Amino acid sequence: MSDTHTFVRTIDASHDECRAVADTLARIGDKWTVMVVGALSQGPMRYNQIGRVVEGISQRMLTLTLKGLEQDGLVERTMYPTIPPRVDYELTELGRMLIVPLQALYDWALEHRPAMLAAREKFAERELRAALRPASISTSK
Amino acid sequence: MSDTHTFVRTIDASHDECRAVADTLARIGDKWTVMVVGALSQGPMRYNQIGRVVEGISQRMLTLTLKGLEQDGLVERTMYPTIPPRVDYELTELGRMLIVPLQALYDWALEHRPAMLAAREKFAERELRAALRPASISTSK
DNA sequence: CTGAATCCACCAAGATACTG
DNA sequence: CAGTATCTTGGTGGATTCAG
Image (cartoon, rainbow over all chains, first blue to last red; front, side, top):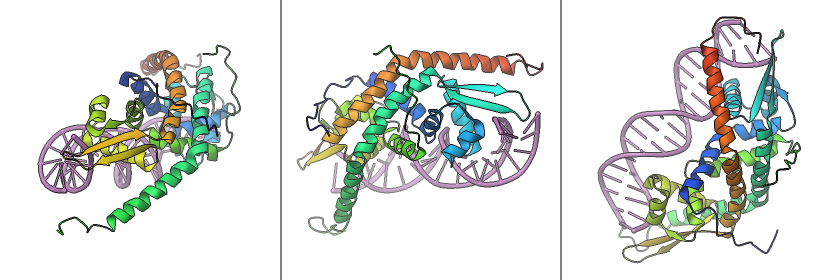
């Protein structure tokens, strides 16, 4: 870890710009999108193949997620009208570029996950003690 | 930005690791968190001050968002038992570090937003034409 | 001023069944 | 194989009110 914590103080400053992040996050920040993108980052894949890789996703959600990604130009859908039908999905150039900031976020998550979990436990513990101490100053209700 | 689009093909490869991103995204990817973080990136702020800056957030959501952030150790809450009470919120070191990947995402969003919107329109248009053409064989694409 | 509590609307998401 | 259709439910978030 870099001890020299670069004192970041100058993010965007404007809320409109935070909106852009929030908006982007609203699209890729759902339950399945990043996992599908992660799966597709390995290369083109078929519908059911993605379904197996992601594992846990329902057909409905897979369809919706893929459609959302296609709509935003992050994945490209190629359909082969064979029998049985075959549909390939693959990341577009835009989609592959998205991986970069996603990876940054992933790195952060991986590095600071322990700290977050620790903070979480400490918070829970503190909350618990606060709950166990309803007396003291309070005029008993 | 580097025009030389480094051909990213080797993201994590494992879904478990995609889970980490998804999980992190689930926490910071809600409707208000990033905006609150963005507001706090400018320095410590009081409760209502944040509420005014973010603008549009309800008290409930502000409270919940702040509590979530505090719980994860991303913001620190300082209470001054004065009258009227005063509570300051400020990013922790962890919170400030989060800004970095957030900024990366923000940069991506800002740069590729036009492409996404364009893809969206094109998609809508294509969908429309598909709806207007229920007949035909449409083997030609 | 800084919340907590309650009620309510909406939608994301799962389960299931059906189609081409 | 690759979806679509329908139903149902749990959670998110808004509005309002109450409290310390």
